[in-house]
Structure formats: C-alpha cells, structure tokens
Length: 312
Image (tube, one colour):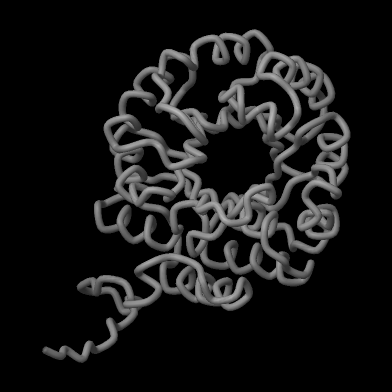
C-alpha cells in the first residue's frame, strides 16, 4: 500500500475568517491528531489588526499537547512572525509568497520580488532554530482573476527559491483553477527542481475539482497533500469568497479506496468534521460525513450508511 501524508490546514484556514475561541482551536487540533493526522497547520503569526481571528496563535500552540511524530506548523509573512513562530515551538513555518503579482500586492502589500527579498532575510533567522522554513507558492495555477497559469511561469520564482536555499514548497491552487490535467503538468514541471518527497501541494475546492485533483496528485507521486476538515476555510479580506480547502474526510476516503495509506481513522475524522461544522455555524461542505463511508469488508470500524427513504 502506498503511504502519503495528509496535512490538515483547517485550524488556520477556518479561523482566519470565522470566529472561534482559543479553546475551540486547540480542541480542533487535538481532534485531528487523535484521528491520525500527523501534520497540522495550526495558525498564522501575522498582524492581528489584519487577521484578528489568529491573534491567539501563541496561546493555541502553547495549549496543544505535543506528541512524537506530529508536526505543528504555521504561516508567517515577515521577520516578526517567524521569530514568534520559533518562540512558540512551531515545527515548520511557511512564508506566504504569492506567485500572482496582483494578489501579492493586495495580500501583503509587496511585489513578488520584494517578497522573495524578505524570504531571504527569514532564511537567515531560521538557521540554527528547530523551526523549518518553507514557502507557499500561492496561486500556482492562477488567480484570483484572469487566465490560468502555465507551469513555465513558475520558473523564475523556483530559481530564486533555489538561490535562497528554501527547498520546501507548498504549491497552492488557492483559487481552485486546476483540473487533474493541470495538476499533472505542473507537478511534472516542478519535480526536477524539487524532490517529490519534500513537495507539498494544496488544492482548493472552489470549482468542485478538489477530490479529483487530490487523487491525481497521489497518482503523480506527490506524498504530501494539504486538505481542510469539512472543506472549511475563508479569507478575511473576502468573507464571501468560496476558498475552502478540499474536505479532508472526502479526500481520505477516496485515497484509501484507491489503495493509498493515509494512516487516518476515517470514523474519528468524520466525528471531528461534524463537530467543526457545529462550531462554524453548520454551513461547511462535504459528502462522506453526511451519508457515511463506503462499507468495507472485514472492517468493523466502517460506519453504517444511513437508510434512505425513496419517494416518487
């Protein structure tokens, strides 16, 4: 059975746009870990006036019970944020680099080139700490407006990342542009520049292609995939935008049925997704948590599919 790592980003993605208490954020991370998730994007160390929902990032990190083999991660945008992440004991910090010029200016107030200069400074700060520094490539497939992005357009940024010495990347389809075909093309283009075992890919379900994209990633050899429990997520600057991640529970079921080992307890994950849905107001996405997982032979843990009442 081929194994891969699912990294859940819902604690950061959901609560950056929707209200939640520190205790609820800690409980969400604990529930994910208990279900077998071994990497969690806990929060972001960013300006609290811009993202007030994540102002308690340090408190959330401090409240989580550390477990061997579980990576607690975060996002950062500048030197202050990285320093805070290191002090909080984050295992990994991901720099918020957009590869879409318009979104870069609107999201961080910096051009792509200026953002890369900041990342180079952060690399020096991270050296010698226990926090691994990597970089998002937000909008790797295009967006939020305009045509999709050709993989070759990533070449200048990938070259600069190599020069800076940042080898861990998250290719993020933050706006749901990528189809399975585009997924395959971009991974094939990037693979010579980054080992597949150190590459993470994050797709969003904005246009309904998320689970199909996740399956294609696994087939392409990507072994680190980002998803979001109950398809949760939003952006504080665009509260009405549909920018949730791919439902972790839906992705896990599809991957397991195809013979990939995620190491995740699906019933426990479904329970966590339903709990999160109530915390966030009952409007989150997903399929498997509503109807139950596909029953499997010789699997006593598989939930029973509810009976349906058919009417003409």
